[in-house]
Amino acid sequence: MAKRKNSKIAQKKGAGGRLIKAPEIKDEIPAEQQPPIFSLEYLQRDYCVTACQPQEQAQFAIRLRKLSEISWKQIKAAPRHGLGHE
View 1 (cartoon, rainbow, N blue to C red):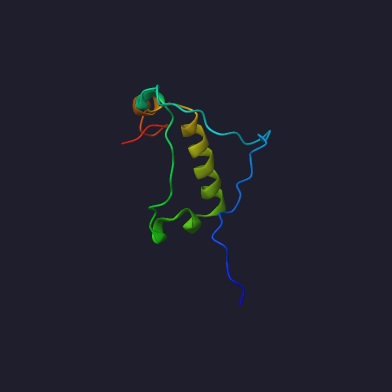
View 2: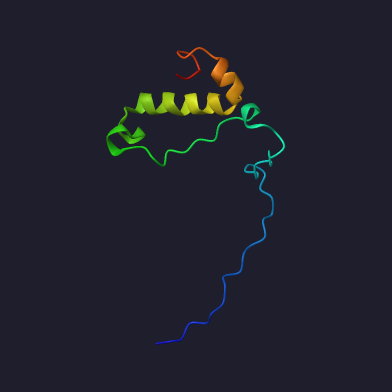
């Protein structure tokens, strides 16, 4: 059996893709003026997106996209049956 060397894997330097770009750092902008960052990490299995019908999954994706384009302040000001929240 060959011995492994204690070397790190070389990191590739990014060439700056045309379609995917790193997000801008928004530390100077107050949280209320920033769009929300979404995570589905804590969804329970019975309430997961995978339990939805394809049309519901599409509507969910569209809603997330719309919400990601506005700030928390705008979301809080929106009616709860629109893009707002309870």
